[in-house]
Image (tube, rainbow, N blue to C red):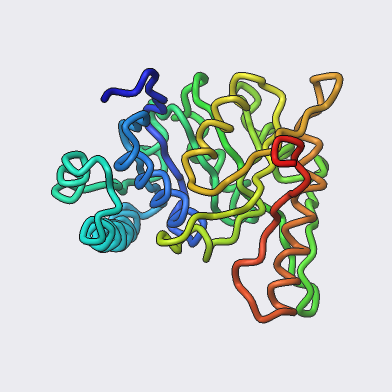
Length: 268
């Protein structure tokens, strides 16, 4: 049976997405594109300043995905077996340079270290389509004697506000900042975590919420400024949460601690 409505996301790119968060997000989104009949993603592309590095990382991610798909198929967990067969036979994630990746991208997801943003954005800015949606996952972290803190020494107060100032003609949405890389990369388990999503453009925010729900287990809270003009200011609070989570993981000897908001009225 065909789905009543297909969620179409076009071309999704992760410039500088060769790190742990980029790996996890790209693989999770690829899985959704394979196993869900109501999802259509044209391409998922990892970018790097080095095309060779991007392709090498892509091969690693694809290998992990293919192994996971083969294992899940043998355990008969897939309903759409024909679609899975096609996915197993083709390359799932592509790799290229950052500039090439962002050309004609529908969704751009920034997962690279915040300290590289000021160098990265000018390199790719001229290639970004004004109709693109930019999702910021970055956090301005510093290590102060073994204790992680957030410090956005940029005059804007947060990474998301800084990025929005660097690319003023593209809607910027903050999301996925509090997700642990280890959780994202463990494809066998749903991620029962809450993602906070915020940004000034309601349509871009709606699209980001749809994208977040492609990851199994995720719940979403949209943070909204009553005036509708300062929604990115919530990044200052969320980015501080990330530092707290990292310190908690270190203190507890864990890698996957996260935030799961409870008390939803729909559940009570």
